[in-house]
Length: 164
Image (cartoon, rainbow, N blue to C red; front, side):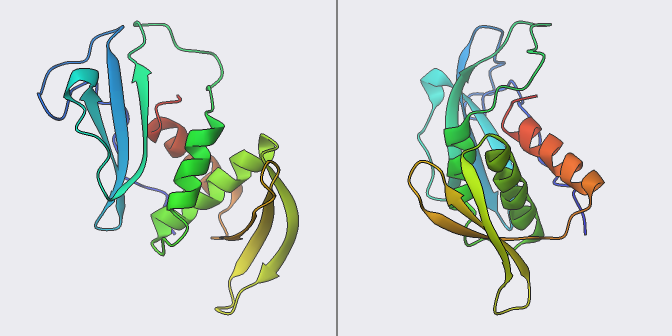
């Protein structure tokens, strides 16, 4: 099992204009699934074309000043939940890993509550979690990642979403 996503983090270059995004510039980022891979694309705010049909998530931000990294990642629960929801039908390993780690992060943040563990009709282990706000029950395939792989996927989730 691999945890190598080959997804770039924030590029600080507008995909539409090629213009460099400088500290203080507003931007939009979009996470899409292309040929079974998760791809991040950044846009200057004035060149944002809007979300595409294959968009998993999109968000706005501001390019931080050099050296102004927060000590702890700022986790946007709604963005993480949006990625989680859009990967619901993903069957590729990257999507399953991303969704599983998003589940663990949402549990850590008390947005999801553990309900049970079961086995699905395909013989895979599944976590059953409940959304603490809406009560929705979710079944999440456990890709059987070890601690090192979970840490690598979490780092990748943070990097892809620009939270590092």
